Amino acid sequence: MRVSRWLADRWVMIVALLVLGYLALPILVVAGLSFNRPSSRLSYDFNEFTLDNWRQPCATSDMCDAVVRSVQIGFIATVVATVLGTLMAFALVRHRFRGRSGVNVLIFLPMATPELVMGTSLLALFVSAGVPLGFWTIVIAHVMFCVSFVVVTVKARLAGMDRRLEEAAMDLYASEWQTFRRITLPLVLPGIVAAALLAFSLSFDDFIITNFNAGTTVTFPMYVWGAAQRGIPPQVNVIGTAMFAIALLLVGLSSLRGRRARRADLLAGPAPAHPARRSS
Image 1 (tube, rainbow, N blue to C red):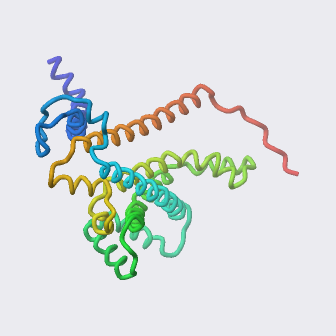
Image 2 (image 1 turned 90 degrees about the horizontal axis):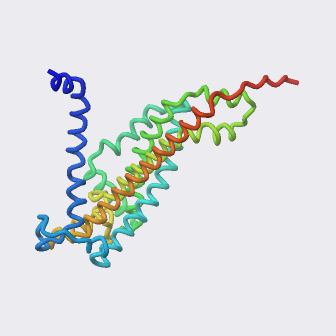
Image 3 (image 1 turned 45 degrees about the vertical axis):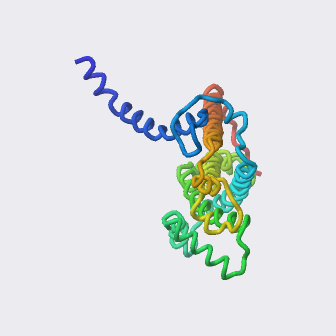
């Protein structure tokens, strides 16, 4: 009876942990294979533990070049998509204009459109316009589908923000720029950072759209796809594990920073009330 009662009180948590474990299982397999010396290039079984893969993360110069190229494309696409998406989110949430509903529908189209359709459409656009396929066509393509995810993420943050905080700052004689810099931006910043991380992840591991618009440029997902025909080197697992660890570290640091800020606010207590200024 005691065990049954314990399970009845915690079954939701147990199911949640099982689901999280199931989702994390492929990541654990990749992390384990990063310390593996396979018996052959076409074998994926765990043969022998080794640290050589981490000591020499670049199996070939082509792989390192592909990783650097993917990071460059992801960084540029993330910066452009985050800036454009944040501005669009502010416009859609804070302003009412003609065609606002249509813009909302257009924003969701890249998210709902299959990547195969988007990749072929962009390829037809670049070819008809005479644009040579390469690094910058990949960047343009990645910006197009990353903007939608940035807009949706920042919109959710703006929708949950209390506008009375900004109104209180304006009542205390803060200018519009001061209100934005001291109130609005710190409150929206977690959503912007989350959108940027999501955009970089989507750009870094995209293959279908990139394959249509890359020309002779090879990114890391395209290198993995090409190497699969002759055997994927174990260093690929090292790159995947390192990228996951970096993303996990950034999320943890952001969460820790937010927790420390909330704790500081609780320790500081409510701000002392000041008498209102007399209007001249």
